[in-house]
Image 1 (spheres, helix red, strand yellow):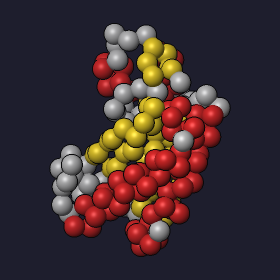
Image 2: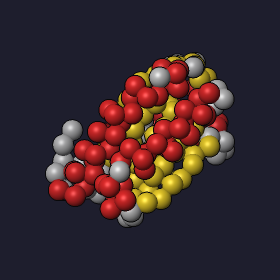
Image 3: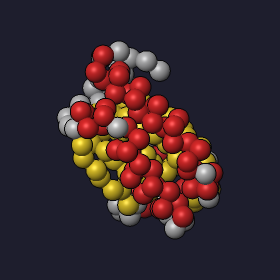
Image 4: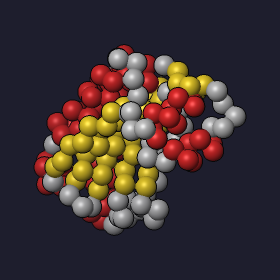
Length: 151
């Protein structure tokens, strides 16, 4: 899956990228990370299947937000100016899936973003990445709860 950079910026600025929001408590998330995160993974995979960018966000009380996003660069979708600046020389780029954690106790910057894989691979082989993604989420839960900052 490829994305035109100018079209991406336009879609973000005009709120044309679908982001589905889920809510839970830390206790429920800790009890079953895989079950809680699965709807987010499935939603993003479905968006990719429709050849659309998308994202899903899990709001975990006030302590943490976990997002699964499609993007062309290792930056949150809610920062179009930075994306545009970083990708200004590119006309088109491949789309990847990223995991994003936001919260004061996630790390010193309050933000962690990591690539999972390219969008097509994510859509075609989602089950292959689920354990890795759930482990990543668990590490962010641990960091928030322990107030440790691991990278």
